Length: 205
Image 1: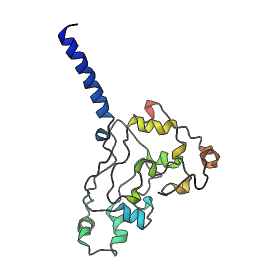
Image 2: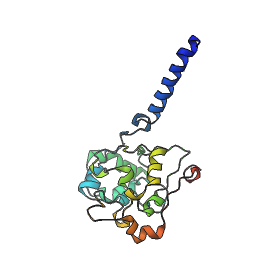
Image 3: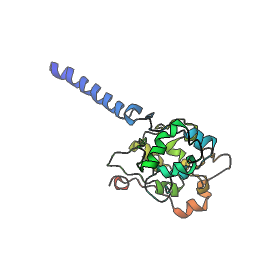
Image 4: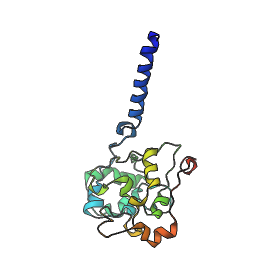
């Protein structure tokens, strides 16, 4: 065997293996990504200690493909009275007075060739925690799911572990075993004939 093949082939194999490993590693898929936000917002306080429903801030998520970030007016619904003198909320009040949106940094972002419809998943019975984790325990929001195609397909091929009753979608501590919940016995689930698509065109369009 020529010397260049003896060196080149093993080098190529190592390069491919390293590339594949890196592509599917948490580092590439950004698991743990925790950007600094313009305003320190604690989900642990709001969603956890105060028990605020996700939909108060991310309103309309059951009807739209995206989970909209809250406009300043939503925050001011409470903070025009609560902690309104706090220096940590200075940017919030400036945003409200100047009518300029707060430049929140997106944590969950998909590439342009992939589409995710929040309303479709929520209406099918997939709860927030399945993708976003226990945000009620997060002082700072971080990315907990890889959002890779393989990760999505795992759920599409076996959705039952992530299905819950419609009135438990935003419940961070819902345990299907504690209430003996069985999706296949749930009329809502059976009526919807939930069959997550696996075809490319379902998400790539």
